[in-house]
Image (tube, rainbow, N blue to C red):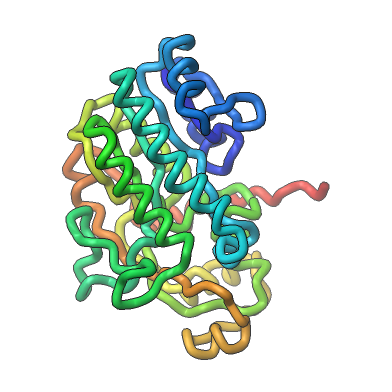
Length: 292
C-alpha cells in the first residue's frame, strides 16, 4: 500500500490518478483530516494502514508565487523542513520507503552548459554566493533533513510543472495570465511524466537517492510564449530581462532559473520525453479550465 501525503495538491492529485490507472493500491491523506504533521500520528497511520511506501507531496510553495513565502516564513519552514524531517523519521522508525518531492529551484544557472547533476551542491539559498529566495532555502534544507534521517529515500526534484490542463499551478497557464515575463532558460517538468518517473523508481526498486526529474533539454521563456501564441493561447507577450523584471514587477524574492541534468533518471531505465515534445503535446491537447 502506498500512502500519499498532500493528496489534494497539484502533484498529489496526479499521483492518485496515475496510481489508480496502474491498479496500484494507495491511500490519500489530507492535512485537514489526517494529522501527519505530528510524528506519533504519522507513525500510527503507517502502522494502521500497512503503508509500505510514503509519497510526500505536502509542502508550501506560496500562492500565487514564491513572494508569498517571504511573508509566511513560519508556515513555509514548517511545511518544507519540519514536516519533511518528521516524515523521514517516521519512515525510518517503521522501515517504510519514502519518496519526497523536492524542487530544482535550489539552483541558478546552467553549470557551464552541463546542467546541474544530483551531485552538485545547491547554489541558490540564503548562504550561497547568489542569494536565493526563502522558499529555495527551505527546499534545500528539506533535502538535507530527509537524507540525514532516512537512507531508504528517493528525493524527486520537480522543476516548473505543466501539462495540458489549465490550472493556476500550471506554468503554461501562468504565462497566459502574467502581463510581464522574465526571459530565462529553464528545465521544466511535465506533471504526468514526472509522476510516472517517480512510480518507475519505486516499482523498479531503483537505487535510493536524489533524482532530477525534468524533461530533456531546456527552453527559454520566449520560446514557450511563442508556442502559446502559435496555438492561439496568447495574443502578445512582454519579455523583460532580469534587471527590467525586478524593477518593474517589484518582486520580493529572487527567482530561480536553472538547467538540470537528468542523466541519472534516464540511466535508471526511464525514457522521458524532451521538453519541447511535452510542450507540443500539452498545447495541442489544451483543456481550458471551466469558469467557476
